[in-house]
Image (cartoon, rainbow, N blue to C red; front, side, top):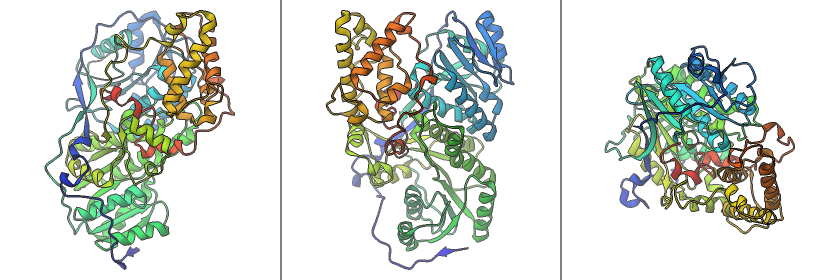
Length: 599
């Protein structure tokens, strides 16, 4: 093996502190956790069909169909969806159980059905994906939750609820609760059903743990993705916590810039570098065997991952698989190889994409939701496991290289970067914390004075239009679009120039489309991604209302097959920003308050 021995003095580059008094803000202000709270279900109501039920091997779809009667249409999982369904219920993820490989296949099949959908509400069912009241917690089932959260950002017109069923619950009671959910007007988009009751997730402040991690200098600590920026910082954190023997792995050998960072670590610890693919079980077993020939393993940090952003409508299955691979296949291979070894820490570096959702990052969201689920699953098995949902870091990663426009928009949304010393102090405070995912985010924003939909809220766009004479409508809608585009870009906008030429990128265009959707008009996704001039968007809005065969608020979105294949791609800088910002940039960040009660 190659061991890099100390050769140069360590350069001063501390990223940690010992007391809150030396930090810009208290550590406690950035600590949050996901908790599940009971929430009563309404009585439900008549279900207006047809409801398409994707057939699953476990029979959930058929039991629902029996209860729905003539309103139900059973659809084999390998068949196209019938046109005109008012709701689609997809329980096919249940068939994967705890098999991560089968769960990835189920996710890709679900994405295929999402591409077919142009209208109707999509219900995604899982079983034991979430740990609620001491029950459940299955990493493989968690994949669909990341997908669904991202879908809510990218395709809000589908209003996709996520429903997690309990293991071993009474099937009749389960169907009765599902009927009440599907037939009611329940505002919650995320629910867990357990023993005849429903719970919903909330994000709550987390008290710092008084217990600090002190590592054994004789044991070995393995950092996967250890040659990346975050991996190297976390390797330094391990050394600060007492580690003196590190193994850092990556897919390629370290280059010159990384070599300098390694030399800093060498001043206080021995550092062994190994190349390998974490998603390859053979590589994981090989490196683990070499590592344990050197000594006893004390802990593992998984900081590997890739980002390849793209909308679900245009992303290939191969691209989705590439994004899932290092986090899903990699973490699963690592968990299997480690077995029941008792480690001081098993840290998974997750992202808020999996918890909050982010348009254009569905695969990345699913991968991070898997990490959150794996940490919970390991804790339920009596093993170490912590998933840290990182917010944006300052001075590190893509967040440190954002342009002024995006940095200003984040600050305006109340999302501020974590200074490295604050991020590591926060990690100290939670590494011995709860089994649930720990969210480390710096959020400084006041709650809205008027809740969405309450008295005093702005009337829907269609109401504004219908109140005006025909000759005034185009100008009014143009002003509406221009004002919202200006708010998105945080600059003045020329209504007669394409928004793309004025600085709008793909994710901003989705945000603007979602704003129009909330106003009651859903425009073709492809046309909006082209970011035309506000005056043309106004023409599209009025055309959609004129063509609608029913009242405007119920207008169906245009089919996704109208998307122009020659659309400009996602902006190359913005498409990678979401990873550095924990997936919460733009669509996620600007909706943070709405997600304090997730859904």
